[in-house]
Each structure stands twice: as C-alpha cells, then as structure tokens.
Image (tube, rainbow, N blue to C red; front, side, top):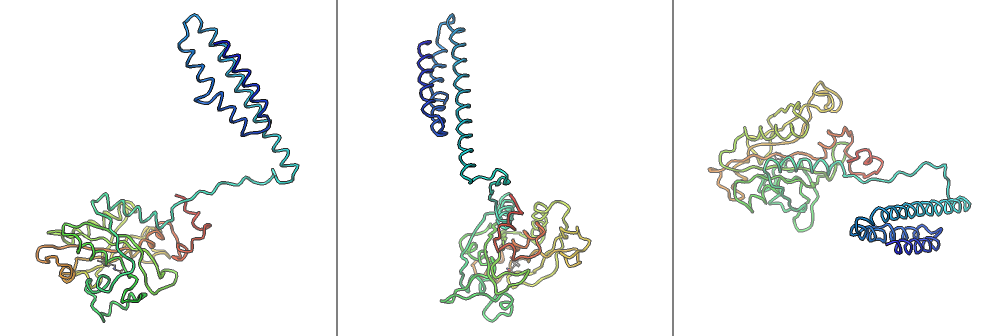
Length: 341
Ligand code: DAH
C-alpha cells in the first residue's frame, strides 16, 4: 500500500510537470489520478479490505496524498489560466473592462406556447388532437361545410388558389369533415393549424393560426357547448373570466353564435384593447348543421354535435398584451426575447 502511494506520487509529479501550462493536459492528469476510475479511487477500494490494524496509518497517508494532488492540480490550472490571460492581454485581444456576454437562451414562440397550452387543456378534457392538410380541396374547405359554390359567405374568406382546383384552407373547419369521414361518433377532437386569407393589417394576417373543436355524440346540446367554452376559458384565463354568447351566422352550424370573454386588459371596464366594450371576441361556435352530417354520412336524427373555432394568434396577443398581430410573425429576436418561456 505504502509503496503504491509512493509510486503514485512520483507518477503524479512527473505527469503534472510535463502538463504545466496546458489546461487540457492538466485536466487529463486530474482525471487520471482523481477521477472516478482514477488511481486514487483504486487505492481507496483496496484500503477497504486492509486489516483493521493497518487502516489508521494507511488512511492518513492516503488522505494526505489526495489533498496534495488536489492542491497541486488547482495551483497548476490557476497558473496556466494566468499565463494564458497575460498572453491574451499582451496580444491586445482581450478587454477585461467589457461587460460579460450573457448567453442566449432560446424560448418557444408565444403562438406555439399558446397552442400547446390549449392542446393540453383539451387533452385533459378527453379530446384527441387531429391535423389536416393546409392545401385543401373545395369539398372539405367549403362544400361539406354547407358552403356551396357561389355562397356569399365564401367572399368573407377569399383565399389563395392553387392549380388543380385546390386552395390554401381558409379555416381549420375542414379537419372536422376529415375526422368525421374517418371516424364514427362519439368524436371529441380539436385541431390546431395554419390557415390563410387574403388579408393584411394590424389585426389580420394572410397566414394565421386557428383551433377548431368538434364534439359529436348522442344527446349533445347547446348546454354542452356553453359549458365547454366556459370551462376552457376559465382554465386558460382564470376563474374570474366571464363569457358571453351572441347570435352569429356560420353556414355549418345552426344555431350559430359568436362568443366573447371579459377583457383581460381592463377586466371588463372598457379600454383600448376591447374598444371600450369590455369584451374581446374570441371566435364562432354552434350546433353542427344537419347538412354537414349529411355530407359525411352521419345520421343527423341520431347524433348531434357542437363545434367552435378560435384564433390562436389573437389569444396569444390578448394573453401577452401585444397590440399588433404582425409582430408575432416578423420573428424579430428582440421582440420574441421579451417572452421568455
Ligand atoms: N371556421 C370559422 C372561421 O374561420 C370559425 C368557426 C365558426 C368555427 C363557427 C366553428 C364554428 O367550428 O362553429 O371564421
């Protein structure tokens, strides 16, 4: 044991001497002697099986050597660092007076975070998360949603057409259709995704994000719709949020409505964000129109359902107090860095 201690000490001295001034080599020496699989650990294991009488003296020597090695390594790396620093200063490449550079930390985009949060709430409520193509056909985007060719409501969502009669989907509602074509009730699904319209100003973008919810089963009523919307926004914004439903027209629901939440900026007293009304419009909703069930072959006598949509970007704006939708899409790091995850 003692002979090994001496050998290790000699080897250590030699190793450290040849590593002097080189931080990498000093680290290698440290690992070789002090590392988990290093020389000192090996000795420690042998120490455990020594006869009790020999332990006190051996232990003392072992500890002394370990301390020596640790101190010598620390001194050698401090010296190497000092030499390097002096060399850098001499070369003029280092200004120690400059403020330190803080490392950049990535974070999720506010829209992504809002989407994920909404998805989580719906998953907790037992919904599946679905997706569909962004380049849609006329049937799924319009016709099956009770928007026949020449229906005036098509104008409200004028869009980008692609060759071959395809178009960039104007809403996430076509995913309702695809889901009902693929599965039989009971259905509880949401689908978040990008949608496109020919629009561009502070509150409208040619590409934005929606989330669509659809529930189809026997005995689903307007009360289920109202309860679900209520539960969703209470979870998202907090229990103090108030919800309001107004009659609204969408060809794929009957009755249809729009729903608002009490303004999150002023608490409902009226401010610029809510244009003095105290309410923020969040989306449309309603009971699935029998014509929609017919288009996908679901028996409208047996099943009823509700659907609603919402704009994810809009909700991210409300949540973070952002007043121009375009900021969300410019990907200016200085702006995005204000929303650390
Ligand atoms: N698809 C509609 C839009 O983009 C939003 C919407 C309204 C979705 C009513 C629905 C609904 O599911 O029931 O303007």
